[in-house]
Amino acid sequence: MFKTTRQTCLSLLLITPIGFATKFYTGPGRHWVNNSLGGVLYEIFWCLVVFLFARKAAAWKIALGVFIATAILETLQLFHPPFLEYIRSFFIGRTLLGTTFVLSDFFYYMIGCLLGWAWLSALKRVTPSSHP
Image (cartoon, rainbow, N blue to C red; front, side, top):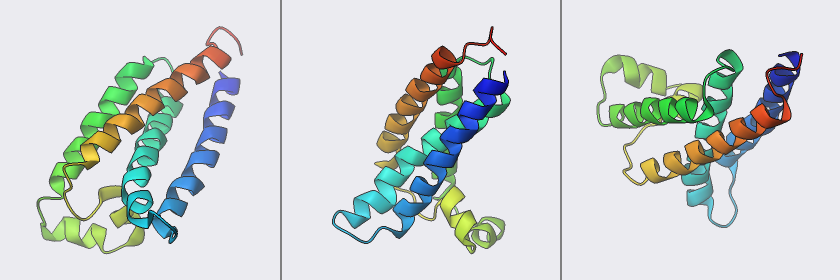
């Protein structure tokens, strides 16, 4: 179990700074990297976070749950109640909740969850639950 936790934490230490870096990228394809690629990495991040606390759950269930949760968050971007606007006024709030609804984000969320599912499946293969 410790090896799985360590591998998952290392994965998070890899994906998190890369995900944040997409928000600050200014080169060619900036709009796509800042928004779409960031969405893919966002999904992988959440798959890893959930897996950290629910290692026995099937990878596909984690990926599906993350997709549903982020789809709900994306839909919430259609609404601007004061409490959401307050959260979005901070960088981390904008990063986690987003600011505008974009239908094409669902495609990138799907790609991210498929990659997240593959990543979790690889973690489960490399660190089977029968080993300490």
